[in-house]
Image 1 (cartoon, rainbow, N blue to C red):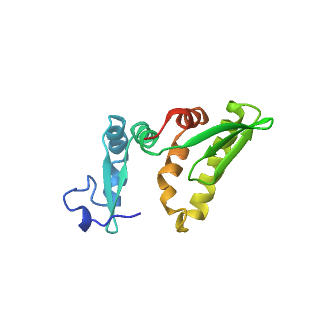
Image 2 (spheres, rainbow, N blue to C red):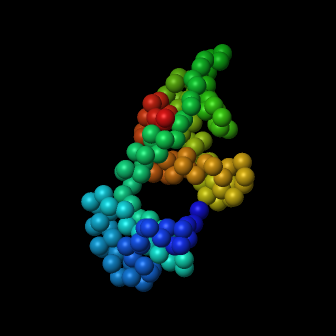
Image 3 (tube, helix red, strand yellow):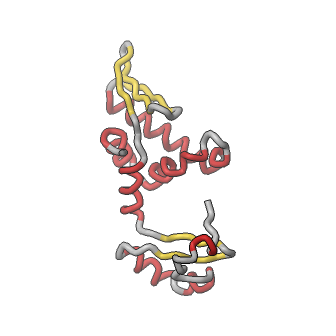
Length: 147
């Protein structure tokens, strides 16, 4: 998703051109290390550079995993309600680990081709959470994250 400079008039870009941003890359990284968000304008669009940890924490709280875990025969099943993810394992840990693997595969597919499909367009937040998280952080999110 791109935002036009005109639509964000109240927000002045910290760096009004890509060239200016490139000249100040160290300053930009230093600013984000202190928690600031830095904006860069290029070809009529504004992009943001921001610290990963607060962004990941935001997605952890706002993207709901909606996971149901139940036993079926000799397997434990983990199902993400409202999303096309279901995994199995011999125990809860195994089912969640398999679910993390499925989420990683989906995030890669989403970036390659699915992001423009109407039924996958709204998965942007989920994909960002997956990309910004370790496997352990994703398991933690599956167990207690979301709204």
